[in-house]
Length: 219
Image (cartoon, rainbow, N blue to C red; front, side):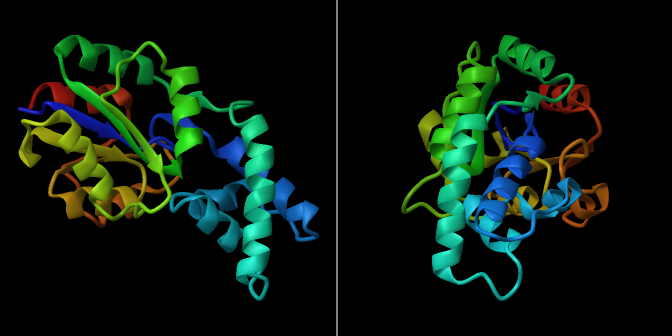
């Protein structure tokens, strides 16, 4: 029986791509670098903002000083525009309602920086009682390191890996679940492809939030 559902944030609970792309393009252009197309960000996101800024820069311009300056411009802009266009995907609210009513614990484990993760959860999901909302934090490894999942499980206490599911939209998320030894759900409505998810043989590949909800509630 699944007692804990841990969700990735960007590309899983919330469509944040336009706001992330807008902030990164602002940071790039302000530094004199070319912007990226929106569709390019599907592959650039997922490993934290610092890595996003590094990989968005042109090759040959990815020295530590340039990346750090780009990151700082990104953060300053994104903090002001973090929720301009970002919205939950269809069916997410209903899924969280049903899981809550069933008594299944909810948590978030993201590679977005902690303050941004907390802000979006508070703004868009304030009525839900997540047992933990974790993002990228100083001194903590980012996904696919399993520490973030282990930390969530530790907050619950009396729970085993077979009672946990990790849900996300990318290869990083599938690797995270595998590394943590929990069941994984790959969602196809996010930033990556079904083929990318299928390569990791997740417990489930879901096309809708309803499919995710039904699988969790019935296992």
